[in-house]
Amino acid sequence: MSTDIADIVTVVNWNLELNGKNDPELRRAAQEKVKALKPDLLTRQEMWGADADGHTLFNDDKRALGLEGELGPDSCTAIFYTPRLFAPVRDWHQARGPKWVLAPTAMTLRYLPAGEDAAPFVAASRHDNYASATQRLIETEWLTTLADKAWQRPDGTWLTLPVLIAGDHNSYPEPGVAGDPPLPVLDEIKNRAHRVHRSYIGPDGKRHMDIRPDQTLRAENLMEDVARYWATAPHGSPKAVARTVNASLTHGPDARVDRAYVTPELLPAVTGVDVIEVDESLSDHHILRVTLDGQLLGGILRQAARDAPRD
Image (tube, rainbow, N blue to C red):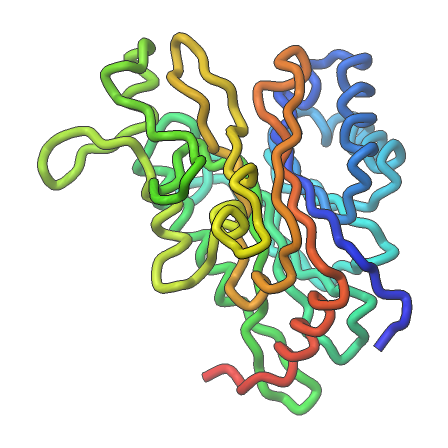
């Protein structure tokens, strides 16, 4: 085991609107905003144009933030990481198409301080479809396959890897946690198209606000919403479930559409979840931050490597 283990590992998620709207000053302000949070792992959405001109904008982000990174297919999403703590093992490129309107960036990362014998884990940045609840459900069902990725041990047996997923889900969490923004009331959303975009027709023939992606990820104890977990943890805070997008006259009330999920074995490492609000001139989404205990994370990954082989 390495002795250079981090006390705190900071994970940040942000959908920076239109990747800075082609405004160099806005992009620079966004970079400074993120840099001040000192992320060790950063998941981003709306990376539009980051692949143009030989990845000029993407490389600029990496230099400005002092991070390495992986830009996903068609610049939909990206993952940045500090090489001091993380090293890429492989990627899981997902092409746009029937499965994904906006393809996620997914990769297996090794947490270096845990040592070579520890299990790596899967990290993903996702951006669900904006307009179709049906498509979001399909995308989420496919996203669950990331929780079925395996890694071969030196002895030839296989282990199933822990997973961390963050992004813009364009849907709502299932109600049930005090402090969580309430679900919008369908008839009170002024924009009629948005009513359709954020709802689905249930078995009763009526439209319901879309919580199915959240329900799917949390089904069968597959994953947990870290904000939901931290809001109800003994030493947690209800501020974990703060809004990530502001209310608007057309789209309805405050909402928590940006969320992070982990497989259960990673939950004990969570030490904090909060939302850093940004001015709407910078982005229409706020920043989600999750902190992990580096010592516990290392221990969890070492234990994962010793767990029973995959069936």
